[in-house]
Every structure is written in structure tokens, then in C-alpha cells.
Image (cartoon, rainbow, N blue to C red; front, top):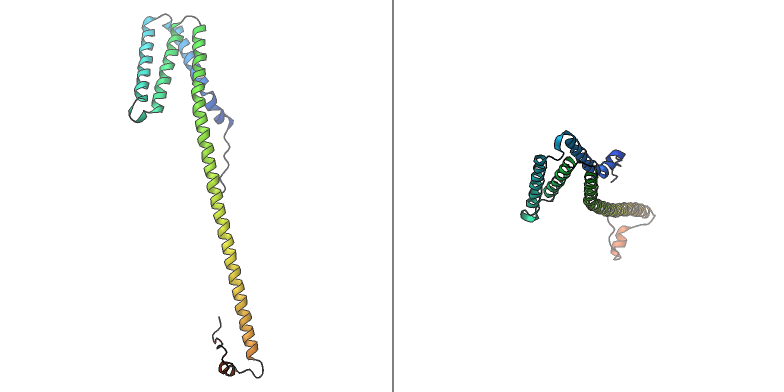
Length: 199
């Protein structure tokens, strides 16, 4: 019944909370590195990023509209890839830092907004599972208590029965040793016959 206590390292607890900021910052840094290596005002590089971002967005739309409601994880990954490619394209194409930083702030805010929704869902699922586990443990504990009470009651009944049988045997033995005791006379008088084999 006792479950092991698991304590997570602080880095393992903080990693999901900083992952969106790390992801968007990495894309911004890679875009600026690409900018420094010749992507600034390059129409071909910008067209490539537009095509890749549009392709990823189209794949996300097809994944979301698929059979049976679509695959949410695949659609989310495709849309995130599309956004990352668009951010990298803008960061690589533009000459200043204001537009890339603005897009980075918007992308980070959107990423945290989407992540918060999944964190809430995960927390609700965790709380629901803990409640169900507690209810199950309480049900099992109640059943164990009832069975323990029943077992103790059976033991007490058996002890009382044994004590009664011993007392009855002692009484019959004591009565048989009394002077003038005649079991046949009792039977002739209409009294019930005494058992001959005692428990």
C-alpha cells in the first residue's frame, strides 16, 4: 500500500518550463548566425524559408484535418516547425534586430500560451489519477479492516465455543462422579438422553 516517494531534481522540474524560451531563442540565434553568413537581404534564402514554412504549415493543416479528428501531436509539431522556419527566415533576412526580437517575443509568448494549456491538462490528469488512487486505497483499506474485524470475531466465537465445550465437559464429568448419580434413572424419568461423545 505504501508507494515510494520520488523526488525529482530541480533541473528536471524546471526543464519543461524553460523549453519554449530555449527553443525560440535557439531559432533566433541560428537566424542571426545565418544573417551574418550572407542571408541578409538574400531573396533566394528568404524564398526558401517561405516555401519551407508554408510546406510545414500545409502539413500541419492536413494532419489536423485528418481522419478521426487528426493527429494533434503531429499537427502541433508541423505548425511549430512552420513558425520556427518563419522566425529563422525573418531573423536571417532582416538587417536590424528590432523585427527579429519582436517576432521572438511573439513566438515565445505563443509557445508559452500553448504549453500552459498542455500543462493544465497534464496537471488535471495527474490530480484525477491521484484522487482515483486515493479512493482505491481507501476502498482496499476498508475491505481489509472489515476482514480483520470478521477474522477477530470468528476467533472470539471459536474461543468462546471451546471454553463452553470445556466447561460442559467438566460439568458432565463432575456430575458423573457425584454419589448416587444414575443416568438410566434420568432417561426413565423422561429427561433427554445425555450425549455420550463430547466435542
